[in-house]
Length: 481
Image 1 (cartoon, rainbow, N blue to C red):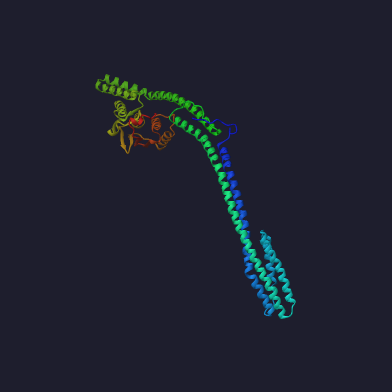
Image 2: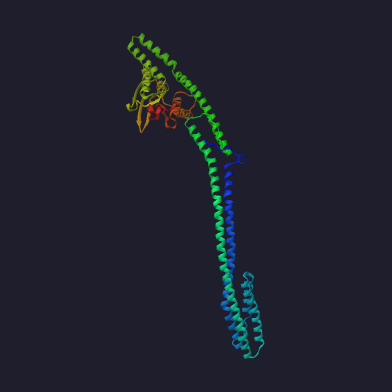
């Protein structure tokens, strides 16, 4: 993998810091252009709005001022009205003053200044008419002064509108030109920034994806079982280096733990074998041999021969050539040999039947699954009754699940005794043997896929039911018991 040497200015700095710096380098120039562009738009829009407002106000002024003043003065002179247009003139002056304050064009300012001057002359003329008593003189002053002045005011307003319209057109041209220049400048900046930013992004991306690809490859190798120590991945980002170092440290510890587990598994297998061998009840062996001697002494050689054959078959199936997983047929032979031996000893109390479905005889189960349950049924179920009892062993297949049952018609258990046994089975009590050990062994093999239940009633016997998934020899190739 190609590695990137740490640069002094970036050493120990995180990817997030480098990404933040890159984003700032990319977007600060663009943001500056946008801010400048927006400010120019705001300034131009303000200027344009001011000129447009001036034109609107002046247009309203021009439309009504002359007609209103002329009409009111004519009515006053002719005697049909007694109101002079002082308020209208004051309103016109205030409007002209506002326009003068907002106007920047020199010709427009000159025109609106003339309007203000003429408004003052108009006041003077109206006062002169007010002081004149004769009708004909008033009419002469109205026509010679008032009408002329209002017409001049109207002309200057038109002049003002003309120059303001020209100012608006000038601002529009100026805005178009500046927008063109600003767009050209923005394009020029982007032409410089984009390639530089792309280059830096690609380089930053390689500095991130390269180590990540290496880490991904390393994790895949570990997943395939390659726990050989490797050099940590070299990367600019300290957290990626720390992650790689952590993976290598974890790999080393995992390799050591696997070796320890292998050694422990070998030790546990030895212990398990010793425990299995310890399950051979020496009293059972002694009593069986005594029974054989007694049969020989009483001349029952055929029964003695049969018992020796059963004992041989029992130990042969018990050892199973060292196999821990055997077929149900082999387990049945082991149980049958055990029961044949026990029936000689307990012929007066023991009757039994074994009914294993032929369809599951080739299915495989852990060795010594049924024998401890049969032994428990004899010694704790049938024997205490001191009367003829029966023991049944059955095996059935349904929906891919094998159901094995060991049922006796013996003494059964009191509810509190049954509950205590169930609690021990659920807790996998390591101090208990028999059914508890058998349940624990099944859970080690099948996990949650199996069930082990005990049902019993006092005086009615006990039934142990085992449900396990159907397994063939191929199914156990990768299973660790």
